[in-house]
Amino acid sequence: MLHLALYQPDIPQNTGTLLRLCACLGVSAHIIEPAGFDASDRNLKRAGLDYLPLVSLTRHLDWQAFHTWARAGGHRLVLASTRASEPYTAFAFARSDVILLGRESAGVPETVHEAADARVTIPMRPGLRSINVAMSGAMILGEALRQTGGLTQVD
Image 1 (cartoon, rainbow, N blue to C red):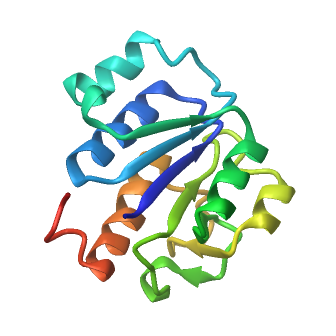
Image 2: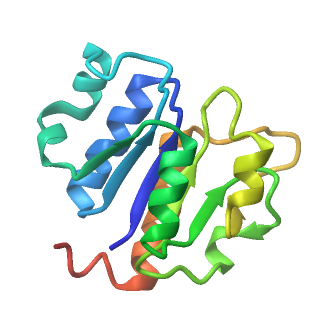
């Protein structure tokens, strides 16, 4: 099963949107603390609606706890990054991959970037910085599910 991990998310609305997406598509979600908001924030609940209880969500105390979990499970970490050179559509995803999204405000630190097994990007027009993290997550997750057959067999 694919996993979607959010590294210290800043914006509850984006987090809620991604958790709702995970619930609908049968993808496990992970939040790597500390988040930049209280997870009980009403904005998170508003964006996630009544789907939040339906998502398989794991919270990790910090990056090290998450990284230990991923390695112990044999998961490949696929980081979405504007610094990557490989388009997400050219990358060969596997069913056990963890798609890792950075903070809206700062991405991920260099140590996390280096720890990733692979880095993918969404090709964009020159001069533009980035796409909203929830939109980016949906695009990359959709391609990963398409490649691995996950769109036709939601558990």
